[in-house]
Structures are given as structure tokens and as C-alpha cells.
Image (cartoon, rainbow, N blue to C red):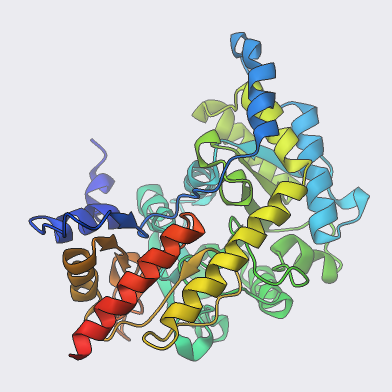
Length: 401
């Protein structure tokens, strides 16, 4: 077996399972899981119908590049969402469908990292989506983590990175809105990353999977493609963005997303993917094109999250401290006791499952930025999330008794 497999850390949910082993929660309380970011809102009926209408196409081998109707729908969505000119988003060159951004983020790192270079490096936020780390390690790169804390607004501070780190960097991984913090990078912060990429010749992978879950309907999160355009970079040089239907359209099981940006990078990535064997089925392509072509269900999805966040934060604001949520479906509160003890105690007393923050982070010289926090995924129906919040409040109050 590949010896690099031994470098992989246990996945956060493996660690959570081990933490909860032997704990018997109260039987009279129904279990509520706020630990996994799996959307629970209803999937759009018209997407399901598109799958049914195209089911006979499972008899056809799909192409890795995807059919033009899907790429066109994605390009049209990008232009509308990020105010891009028609000429800068070519469905033939600037868009590549992927079977979920999880596999695409992993595969892109494999295609990017050049192990013939001296000590290749991937720079990542900390805390982070665990695929960033696993992909880098299996590609043969080291990681340099940028702590995202209350002091820097939970945004990686690129100005603190030493030149020798940037000189080794081959890939900068960013996540906006952030998982688990929900923090959103500004256009200026994105452009700072682009200027550094120009100066030190590295690639930016911008994970924007939560970009369509935001609480202020008038202030959608900005994206790397938008930042490029504002700099006059219509070719999106060195930049790619990753988007998904999982959160936007409540379709995590469809395994559908896309990568968009630099045509040269996508051409090489397509070549990699052709061998990788990850083409999207024709039925899934038809359903995906339908989803990307509709915004009504996305607006309603945000409404549901908005109502949920308002109710939950009203219950918890007097007992827990957390950054004001603006995007994503996570809360990232401080815990009054150790985060693992908090998660275990909550499960034991209230049958509610959260994810300790340290499981999403790595230790750096400054410590572990996830320590003393937990991630709450507000993905269940509003009534369930309200019940969970009431139980959490009761548990926190019991700690003070």
C-alpha cells in the first residue's frame, strides 16, 4: 500500500465516535445530530423529476467533460451570480462539471502538486475541511496552516506568512464562506491572495461550496472569479473556484458540482480526470442543469436557514458566545469547558451531538485554533434545531450550578 496513507489523521467523525463510545444518553430524549453538515431540507421536486425523465440515459457512457447543456447552465449561473461578462466564462474552456466538490478538491491537489520541486507546500486555513489535508499529504506535499481566530475575524491573515513559505507554496487553499467558521472573505482579501499568487507563482483553489447559504439576501458572499474580474483578469489566471449543489440545492446525494476559472488549469485537470474515471452520469447532468437554472428554490432555502438561525441564536445568545453568523449553516461557539468534555457531556445529558472544534484543526505554534469551540450544523428542520438549542442551553446552565 501507499506508505503516505499512514500520514492521514483519523477523520473527525471517527474521533467523535471514539469520544462517545460507552456513553449512554437519556433514552427519553430523541437523538439530535448537529455534528454532520448534511442538508436536511427537501430536495427540489423538479430536480427529482429531471432524474426520472432522463433515467434511460444510464445506458450511455458519459464524457468526463460533461455535455454542453450542463456546462452552459453552469456558465450562465456563474455570469449571473458573480456579474461576469459573457466573454469571460466560456462553457467550453472555463467550466468543468465534477461529481461533488469533495472528490474534485482532492483530485485537483493531485493534479497540481509537483513533487519534483523542492519541498512542495500547500497552504491551508486552520480549522479546515479535512480533504485539504488528506489530499496534500497523499500528493506528497507538506502543509502550512494559517490559524483562523477571533483576532483575525476567522479569515487567514496572508500578510503574516513569511516569504520562504510562499516560495515553496504550490497551492493556496481557501474556503469562503468558511467551514466551520462561516467567515466570508472580502474582495480585497481575495485580491491580496491573487497578488501573492502572481508574485510567487502558485495556484489558488477557492472552495465556495457554502456561497449560496447566506443570511442577508442583499449581501451575497463574493467569490474568487469576481475578485479576478475586478482586477481586470478576465482569464482568471491561477484561480479556480469550486461550487456544489449539495448545500445550495439540498442535493448532497446527487454528487454534483463544478470547477470554474483558469482555462489552462482546467484543461490539464480535465486530462487528469479522463484517466481518473469520474464522469457524471447523463441523468445526473440533466438534473444538475435543471438545478443550476433555477434560483427560486435557493431563495427559499436561504429563508429557511434565516428563520432557523434567528430562532437558535436568540435561545443561545445569553449562554454561549459565537461570531455573528452571516453565511454557511454552522455556528462556531466558544465552550465554557474543554470542547471535547463539552461535546461528551452534552451527549450524555441531552442526547445532542456536536463536533469538537479541535477535531477540525491542527496544532500550530500558537496552539489549536479549534480548541475551546464546537461546530453546530443547523441542518435539521427548524423545530428540531430549536429543540436542540433549548437542550444545549439547559446543559450550559447546568455547568454553572
